[in-house]
Length: 180
Image (cartoon, rainbow, N blue to C red; front, side, top):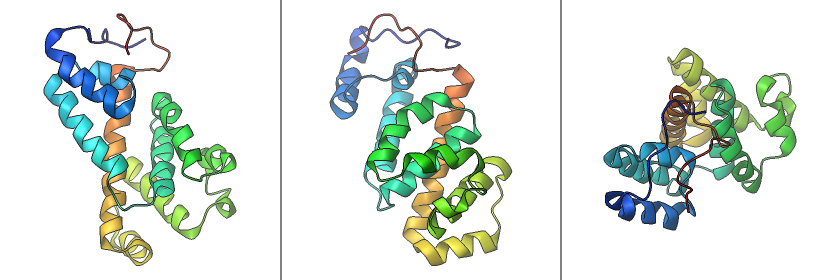
């Protein structure tokens, strides 16, 4: 159960944003309904995360792989539930997702680029400080633009999981009133 009640989406001033979220995402997910307590935050979040998810050159499978790893590392089941279907659609195998808790032991299931991206997700999430040698290795694999996009994606989804966990947002939470 979330630490706060979910925002009332029938509030007239929220209607334009609710309609936009439904148009872009299909429905108002638990995350966005909580964000709606602060319309400016919800609107900025929606714009930023849409750019991260849909506008970058970074490979979608690599993006979803690091998102799933961050969800695992930060104990964010809502994030994992939302992204597992996306990860599979982007070409990741169920065995790869299952191996994430101990991916180094199952390293053969991942490409060299995937292993490097997972290591970066681990470092940025747990240690925060990334060594020059780790960054140089990734730069050789990705180039500058995609490396910046990978770092930005990892940073963004650490933000998401920490927001979810701080407010204890879960996909099975009851919300009143019901959403679109």
